[in-house]
Image (tube, rainbow, N blue to C red; front, side, top):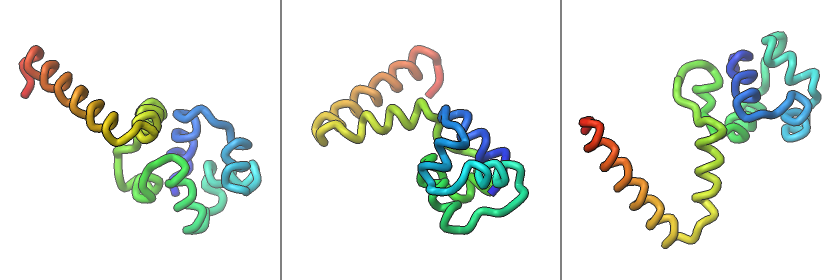
Amino acid sequence: MEGHILRQLRDTHGITQTELAKELRVTQTLIGKWEREEVSASKGMIKAVAKRFNCSTDYLYGLEVNAISAREQKLLNEIKYLHPEEQDQFIEQITNMLKLIKRTSGVE
């Protein structure tokens, strides 16, 4: 796992090393060592970090460039708790809005 990527994810999601350590049931010192790449995280811990930040393990290794932002994650969480019918309506409305934006901006 690339230490700078872990740090960036933490910063983007607005959590401290201590908060992440509590969630993962490790020490804050260990999180710092991962970020400085002084020690390597186990495969299990890398999977736990990927799950926590809703990204792939490939992203944590720097092999993939697309990670979800905290803002995007918040929106996805809101959608997840809607009833299925409301989810469908929401997705339809967003799709229509995106089509309108593309038409008015000349991008299709």
